[in-house]
Length: 203
Length: 214
Image 1 (cartoon, rainbow over the protein chains, first blue to last red):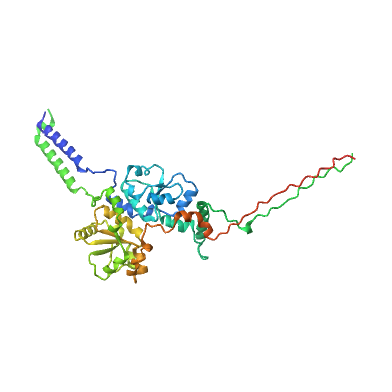
Image 2 (image 1 turned 180 degrees about the vertical axis):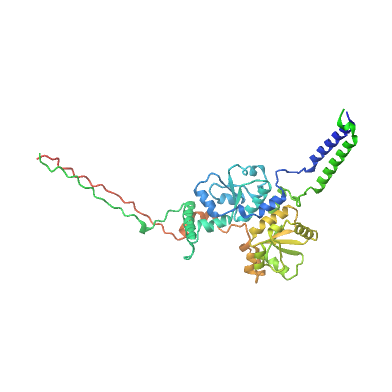
């Protein structure tokens, strides 16, 4: 065999082995820092309390709520159907198993959006998609959904529609009774059934 | 008989060109401008130590009086918002420009000089993402301004006094007793509960028809 070919073969082999060590990353699951920064700066991850309330009322099966507060606060109160993944134990295999389920939309929340946002950044770095952050958190939930504030008289129509939705949602989530307006009470109209004319005797 | 046997120099040239191409490729390869210096585990752990990264509004007093020269304020809102009003002495770097080479070099420079960099936006949430990211790529001198510009603008006359009302801007704390609120919300909102009595229908007994006949 030609000597040149042997040299070439070894050269190629050496280069091929060299490329193995070129991009040896510790964790290939993580996304590149530039990509992470780009995603972090987008505001698309935020959802409003109204959107979450609507999905909850509609019983959307793709909605998955994750409460990132400590377990003690979670047991006191949480949103219907929410799971608890405390922020400090987010990076455990048991906690991460809740994310990346195909078709599921995960909404993270805490007392406000800060802790949920931090959890989101970690999850995005680990290349999990379809995670969202509930803006305002539970404080916002109380202020908008549970105790809605009536809009001013001059507010646009949509503000009133939103207020009506929130009032109804508040009743839904707190189990309060529906407020019945007296004026709208339907009148029950009796209709006398016509007496069937009795065959007036006679034979 | 092989074609290279006729001209062994050709093979040599092919090898040289091949090697040169590969070397050029390696040299011009685009390297990532940032790498993660903190592992995911470290990043999560870091979050529990809030004193390491919070910059309180009352701490601004020293910076604005030029008593504390080891702090640099960076406004990451867009240029328009910066023009509308900003904290005196703050540098304007819109968040999307933070990863530009000159800005990264500047941050690196501050890091070497151990100067504390404080990021702020309109509120704490808007700056949290950028702040947390730059922590993870190794800028441990980066902090985030609590309350953001909105809080500063509302309290710029009495920043020192805000030391005592931390509850106003401190995030992450529940402002309500959620379990209690969740049960009593609607009655508090002032709606009256009226009980409506069901209307009872009474069927009139059919008068039995005189069964005909005379």
